[in-house]
Image (cartoon, rainbow, N blue to C red):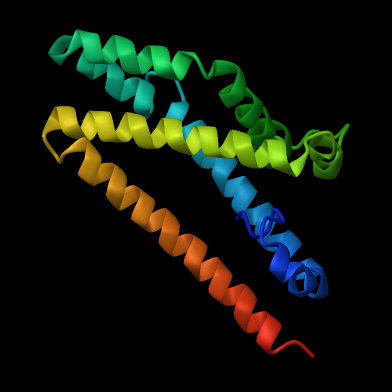
Length: 168
């Protein structure tokens, strides 16, 4: 995704040459990110989400539950912004504004930074829950997640290099 946001400067020509493709992929990935963010942090009691899991944790480890809930609550405004993207663009389409109008005011560098914050919050919360449930050690779980992030980054880079090599 970061390549599609323009942080792969050496592949700018390839991205520009295939703008329709990369715009569609970036839009799809952003949609998925917004939907998954909403699902992960949905506070309704009738869904499975991180806040719902924390409700069960309160009887097992109240201190950890308070800490994790505090961490999530400290990001409420940021999470609400991505919930709003999900609501206005992907779930209930705002007829007054197009997706481009909604995102026009958001610099790509800010979007990237905010997405990284949400990924970090998700990773830390999941790793703490895994450690508490004895599924695995927090460090090992975090390493596995980062490895997957690196694989996705490597795959995106390989796609861009291949497109550059076979550019017409």
